[in-house]
Amino acid sequence: MSDPINPEHYKRGGVECIDAIKAMLTPEEFRGFCKGNVAKYVWRERLKNGDEDLRKAIWYLDRIANAKDKEG
Image (tube, rainbow, N blue to C red):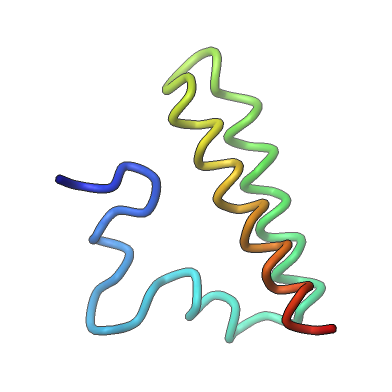
């Protein structure tokens, strides 16, 4: 079964897209990228994918929280 929140097409070649983006950005830039995606998914949830978009927003919030926890 495909994961609609983090589908396989974001995990090609042994590298997950979000990890490649994180490697290209400073921690501050990555945090902003994730926050922008949270805003996008919350903004559109009533118009497009409902609860799935809210789960996507949570996925990005988790990325921010986990990145901050790892930084100390």
